[in-house]
Structures are given as C-alpha cells and as structure tokens.
Image (cartoon, rainbow, N blue to C red; front, side, top):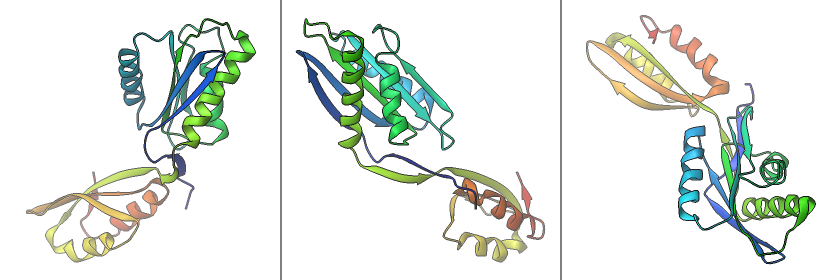
Length: 198
C-alpha cells in the first residue's frame, strides 16, 4: 500500500518567546485547506490588531507540496521562512503556524529575528501533541439491490468507513478510505455485479 500517512498536530497549541522585551506569541493550528489557514490568519490579525506583526507559514497535504510563508512587514526571510523551517524539521503538514510580535523597543537585527521566530514556532509545536494521520479519499458508487450482500462485505473492512448510503431501486453508497487503499477498494467494487463507480 502506498504511504498515505502524515504528521500533524492533534489540536491547536501555543508558544511564547521573549527576546529583548519583544514578545513573540506563536499559534500552531491544524488545518485541512489553504482557505482554512487564511481564515485563521485573518482572525489573528483582527484579534491582535495592536501587534506590530503577525507572520505565518502553512503546509498542506500528505505530499507536503502546498506551502507558503509570509513575513508580514518584517525584513524579507526573517519570519515566515524560519517558521516554515520548523514545520519542515518536525515533518508536519496540514498546519498553520502564526507568530504575533509585540515590539519591545530594541531592534533584534536579522539573525535575532530569525532565531526568535524559529524559537516561538518550535515552542508552539512542542507544546502540542503530534499525531500520525492518513490522507483520506471518498469513493462513491451505485449498485443494484441484489448486490447488497457483496457491498456489505466491503463495509466490514476496517480500512473502510461508510459516509453516505441510499437504499432504493438503485442503491448508492459513499465510502471513505485511506488514499493508499483507494485503488484496491475500487477494484473490489468493480468486481461486484452491476456496481458502477460514480
């Protein structure tokens, strides 16, 4: 079975790092989509409107190919990149880390900023619980009522969860499974007499 597992945080967590009176409050939030990540960024910018910067980075998907980092006015590469670096080094995905900075009146310089954002992000991750998840896919299909017994055998598989079902003249069902098992499941459905993948 292809590897469809990935690591993320079980629940939102926070970290605080203080450097030369500047306060860095980090929020690590599990997310499933880019839109969801951006909603959290917008909310934090509203909640912490009096902060100097709200810098962030996210990574989405088991393949870890969808990511973005934002310095939000800090010198280029001093905030978003080190935050994303922590997501990388913990091998996480489906996560947003946003760091709110309150300026303490003393400039930290480029290396000081990089270290501070990195530490705040690390604190937030380490204060959370890292869990292993699997990328899930949904497979929908229709089948004749006579095939019910064969279909119900499929649903007894621990890798499969029924998310929708409709038993009528033509029956339909949607199953959720790990993406790594999807092809095997589709092949099993296609073997059932009269079953058609949607």
